[in-house]
Length: 162
Image (cartoon, rainbow, N blue to C red; front, side):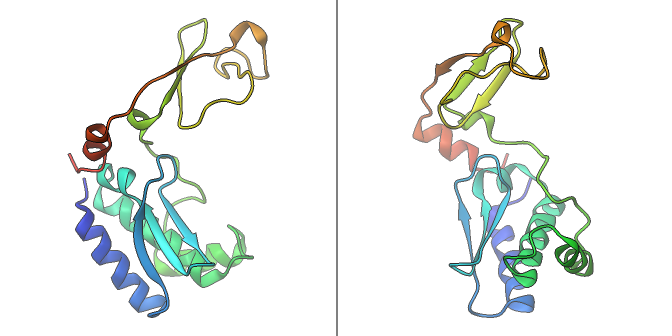
C-alpha cells in the first residue's frame, strides 16, 4: 500500500519532467476511478481512497496513464497517439481501471433475489437487474436497494493506507 505523500512526490516529479509548471497535482474523492487528467484546469488528480489501497507500482502506472493523457491532448482519448505516448513513458496497463474500488464508501447496496450484492455511490434512478442472473434486463432479478450511512471516520479510514 502506498503512502499518499509518496504518490504526491512521484506525481509532482512526473509533472515537472513531462508537463511543466503550469500543470498541478492533487488528490480527489473518486471511489471508482483511479485517476483523472483535467485539461481545463491543467491538473492531474488521483483518488485518495484508491491510492491508499494500491501498491506503489499500480499508483505509478496510474500517474503515467494520466500524464500520457495530458501529453496527447483532449482529442486523443485512448487512441493510437495516446497509446504511443503512454508506451513511451513506460505505461504497461490498459485503457481503463479494472482494480478494486472503494465499495466500503458506497452509500447504496443492492441485492438481487439470488443474493448477489452490488454497490453504488449514487442512488439508482431506474430499476436495475442483476447481470449475473440475466444478461439483459429481467424484472425477476431486480435489485432491492438499501441506503447505508458512511461516517466521517469511515471516510478517513478509507483514505489511510493499511
